[in-house]
Image (tube, rainbow, N blue to C red; front, side, top):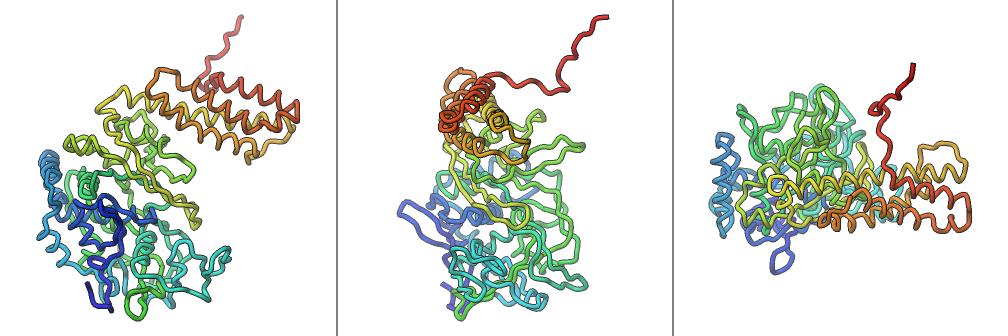
Length: 513
């Protein structure tokens, strides 16, 4: 343990984990040393867990040599398979050698871990501890149902403060922040974090050891001319006014894309944080690089623009299943996370048991935090297109049918409401629609899993589900109003009728001379 006036991200306990004996906390060193006995992270905040997984994955790559861009694909896969065959986890000497090379002291005066000590001079005042903590009202925000406000800023245990620091690095808000003056540049605004509003899909092994090795993305470029550094490995603090260095693999790509700069202010004995500086880290344009754990939606523009799938707390994970099992294909509108491209090369015992951990943070693009969520899928690599193309195509067919039926349900319910109430068109869905859509998605998952083992047409099954949801949502109004009953009956019939093709796809009518 470190002295009471210091807190080490490597050695002090701040990361919740689960093993066969229960739950406990550990630091980054213990996380790596005991990875083969740890079953999974148990961090309550999903975005913090997602950030810690990325950092720990880079540590695993550093310690094992899987971060060497000179390794060809066959050598890299063979080395990873050899490591996965070990039962004693990561090499202890290699772990300790790595951690001895760098400072992981959270309150180091010169290089505090994942922070910038220059903020003391470059910011006129701190931002406040409430600004650091997600969920606490700060500034002029009203303190609804919360004991926290700027006149009663309660200290935070340092371990929890570290987790919030990482959330800001990866999911931080855009817009106004504490003003920072760096050289000739003064700015009171920050850009959004690299993962803001996204949902991540991490391979999940039987132990954390398997999780980290399976989660290392493969080097896909032809060469890497510049050295790759994580923020704590950089020889010097970054120049806020300089152009951004390339997004080298894997360190900068997974840990060095942040747009925020943070500095924690300790309490009397470093066990608590009493204040924090939170501001921008760079004003340079964002680098065009995609995180390897995100589902990417490929655009139709020229050139196509890749956009990560947005997190949606109301969207069940199985609705992304087609994106996870289908191999990259120009015909598909989404692409599975890049890290999935290497999973079929894993040893069979690991591959067959591998699940997927889902971490999402439902946020808008600026400042609103809605909700974070997490989920675990069953083992699904056996369904991938490389192993079972028929099952993968059936999954894609069912997911597509579920989504198109939901869109059809929304349109027809809106139309039924307008026909009943003789209302003018509105951009806001009526209450009928929200209730029917919610009921539909509650029942659609059971229909989806049933369809995977049958040859029943997916469109008909989901139409049945949508019809039940619509009738349930409008039961009372159909009983009271005959016009509503007629409109709902018309909508139910239309659910079973395929929608007309787009106007540009229709065959022109023939004309007689």
